[in-house]
Length: 192
Image (tube, rainbow, N blue to C red):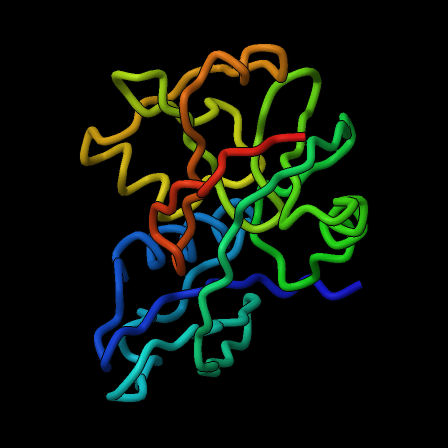
């Protein structure tokens, strides 16, 4: 099985977005595996100068490869709840086979919301935030501690809270958060 790790970084007109958060996760991921980070990502990324790109940094303890892909936004308007108590995605691996199998269960929805042990975690590609009419809350136990989630927590724009699947109906809006979409409110907020 492929054990390469992955960072997905947004590039806008040659500017690397939120690099310090990606660098921190890169270093923390390797540290978790008892490995040393050998690179500063800034030195490896030579981004295209025009347009919006998804920069993929694939790495392991020895190698790093960087590629650039034009980015097209895909709107999320519907989410399907999927219960799975066995999932573990604490490190962002290049191999997403298990997440892809869960994603296939979306039954026509744009994405899934993974419920683990009764609590909301993430979608297949993003962290989540829920608006109660006053504040935005992100699940306290996500599958993956995302870089955009970390930045919004640091900025005091979102707050952690355990959110059970039963409590979701109490929230006025839901948003997805990741490096590419930043913070995007789900248009209809539909969760099936």
